[in-house]
Image 1 (cartoon, rainbow, N blue to C red):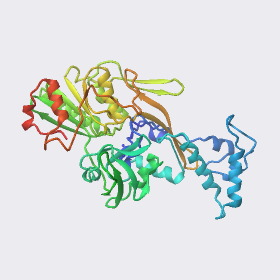
Image 2: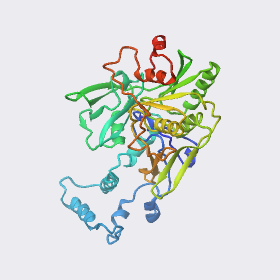
Image 3: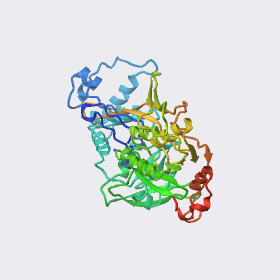
Image 4: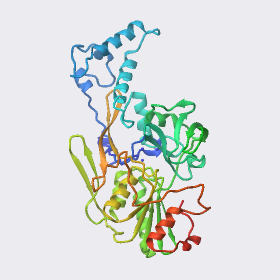
Length: 433
């Protein structure tokens, strides 16, 4: 999975670094895509209060004045009653204070009911940070939570996930036999990732199936291009963006230079099954069609709003453009399609997008644990909330792989119709999928 996620790191060692947490199931699986920025903070209230620096002082925690109550809605007496009961009655003794401490915080964050807000004990936090640096292997798919179910957002072309037949919208019922019911995205990612050449068994349920099926997938190091470009018949430039990472802007610039040199009359921007990625890459891409105004904004619970304006050379302004999307289009892909739609710079064709547009703040504590919590949501220029809702196409076209002819692509056919070009010219153009 998630280097995902239009992510902004604000610690000195991460300044200026934007890593995508759509990392290749490791990477493409954290569920944090575009817009999720992480703030690594080195101070913690606990450390300030009790002088801890390198490790959690559980003795200090247990020694806290238990009469202190920070809530007007509940009494913390029950918390301490459970704590003491476990220590006195649990069958397997001794019970480690640190286990109870970390477990209680995990449960507290889980109480938010937000699959993208997670507390990481020290070991889990270390593994999560490794995934952000791309040190892990995976299967090449982005996963997320949809209607409380763990689902595949999009498998990347040519990856183990795609070759195994995973499709956007597939429900992941179990991972190596372990039920995913109530599982958060980060736990799922940790269970799916692993050494290259090893395998993982996913139990998948797909719409139209009568029962779930087990699919075994061999993990691998993933190396997928960000942008694919070709000129199609009718002088139509075809740009397929597979993900938004560090290479996207440079590869997209190469495609733009080529289409300008070829005097392209129209553009198809294919964002289908694109799980997202870096925020700055999304802004740079959308800006090429939009000469002025806002690309996307993030809104916080305080009412604060941060607007991201168009930038760059705007080299594609005025060129007729169709953007292709589907249920696997998420995060950064939704930012681009939403901006072009609101500015009427392109016609969006396809299916309702995934709806991933939340922003996470990531805080590390002195003991090595960390908290990732949702602090804002992304909005399109016209004020449409991307999160959970997605982008509604201007022209609805549903793909049916069981009915389409070999080599046929109904969305590209529709794009040609909107350009006023006979679809018969596509016979030698090939499919974009």
